[in-house]
Amino acid sequence: MEKGNTRNRYPLIELNLEKLRNNISQIVSRCNDAGVSITGVVKGFTGIPEGVKVFAEAGCDYIASSRLEQIQGAIDYGIKANYMLIRVPMLSEIEDVIRLTDISLNSEVEVLKALNKEALKQGKTHKVILMVDLGDLREGFWEKKELIDAAIMVENKLDSLHLAGIGTNLGCYGAIKATPEKMKSLIECAEMIERAIGRKLEIISGGATTSLPMILNGTMPSRINNLRVGEGIILARDLRDLYGLDMSYMFQDIFTLKAEIIEVKNKPSYPVGEFAFDAFRNTGVYEDLGIRKKAILGIGKVDIAYPDMLCPRDEGVRILGASSDHMIMDIEEAVRDFKVGDIIEFDLCYATIVFATNSPNVRILCK
Ligand SMILES: *Cc1c(COP(=O)(O)O)cnc(C)c1O
Image (cartoon, rainbow, N blue to C red; front, side, top):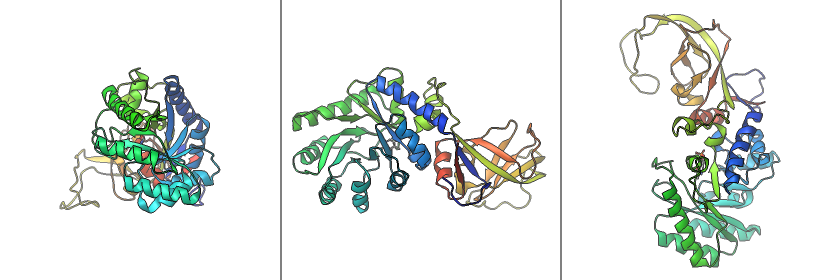
């Protein structure tokens, strides 16, 4: 995908499709061995269609995003897959949910009724997963009775919907850990529903990347049979850094950010004059290291939001800060002799991938 038409335009995000394919296969095979299907979540890289295609080819049972635009983009690109909407639908997007997706995560009776009505209108059967909030306090039913009643209603009254199963989400808002105990609570909810409707549910979706450690260390309770994974595939950095797991079979450099140097000068490290506020109304923090060799790059907070979360691949360079469209680096101790026009490469984290791939100013190149 090329946004804009200038060929050598920077900033640039490179996506290595073969490394991505490796990471998907590694996670899919480990999960499938544990009886768990994978929903490949593509919102983390704004659903770049070339990347979505690899997810569909590499064994994901579902392709998911929180944004219908990304699912539409993948369909327009010609990718055949089972598409899942993983943000509970807005009432204003019901028509597109039915048109574009096979299955959605849900937590509101009013929305379920609207989905049913629209599915009938479009002559489709739409699958739904009811979300249970187990304490992370984002989406999902909190009251068990409300959950069971909604399940019975979908099963018996909403004929154009199919109750495929239930799911939960942890470690997103409330920073609550996904544990075997939380999974057992989810399975208990599933079994309450199964008793109420008199049949087994097909899907018990135990969460996102934060539930992967239980697969990798063999503690996932056996009835959990689906996970919805984004970060743990495209980066696997949190599993390594925050959970201490050996992720050496995964690439952490699928994405490369490249930005161009627009100024190189020796300047003071400490601002000169009377202090007021920076471009984002903050009072800055500056360390006085005397005169330093510094570079300015043609990229800014508009593109990556968190400059301090980029990791330069060059040795001896340091990111000092950024405004909307300029990023300032200390290159005094750099191994390379940087000049205007040189390109600097960075590793990204989840947040910087999300922002950079969303920025219309950042060109995307799939290799
Ligand atoms: C974003 C999201 C996921 C995937 O999260 P990762 O941390 O990227 O694995 C799964 N489920 C829901 C409901 C989400 O919103």
